[in-house]
Length: 438
Image (cartoon, rainbow, N blue to C red; front, side, top):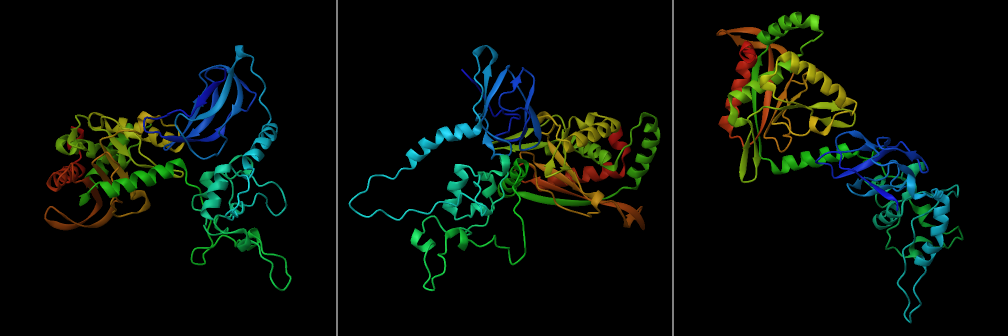
């Protein structure tokens, strides 16, 4: 009996996945531990290994098909000792299914009254007469929503149009499914050729006359959209901003980098800011919390999630126990996590969790911004660029390198005064950085 290979849960929060690329094909023999496919989750592209040996008899979900739920069968494998039969070619399988499809499509017996007009099917071929490839589900959705499926670019195998390709497709490009056939094909009085649904379908309309292209959302982008929308809709955000004099921290960084040069370690300003936030949360432990319905989770360890931009989205790898780690260790781990995040090589435990977050856009010259809280966390620190500004130093106006940091807080877990205490502690540690190294 064939073994069902199901969409695995590659992380605790994974609900669905997309087959980015099959590394095997039907008829291949595999052994336990062989790589079968690359699966795109909501956070990264991960490898899927075989746990049994046998022969791949059928691939159910193809490369680039619409995301499927965890637990959905994606392939079948026959054990080596079960006499696996070679997989049927796909054309042969389609031919075998054709009679059944025709039988299913047979109209019901005629009744006394005239039947209601049936909708015209979505065009099944392109202008050159070649067979147009689209999944049955995609055809049905296109018919229901009035989408000209022939104008949609398919992302499935061999350009096959799947459900996900219809998301964002212009509606109304095809005649509505409920329109009678007589409305779609009529002979004008001047004797010209009848106008068909395909001929009457206009090209995809531009928004306000501006040309555009439709880009299919990745699983990661869908997750970002869903989670951050939920955050802004359900989490009562408030924001606190504070200016910090960076001159002392920059001087310390120069001295530390000189001492670490022999070890090949170079500290960034962000490494020191992560350390300062960790030390501030230890100093103000009531801010190291999360809201959990009718309870509040108060953490005894500070794990900082750092926002890292990656192709197509954002991910937040975690540096654990920041308060008890040296800045050199933080710098080494931050560099490694960021590099592996951009390569899609993080393990789930390396980006899931965290008690607070930090997001730094200073490298882009952004002076100040407010970040969206990453639930279930209760705060995120947004860091802008350090720049020369007039600043009061020792009761006198002088020029200093000043950075603006903005905290976004969940008011259900952290009240305004408590958030202000945390921001004040962070400012003091940045301006007198020896305190966070003690």
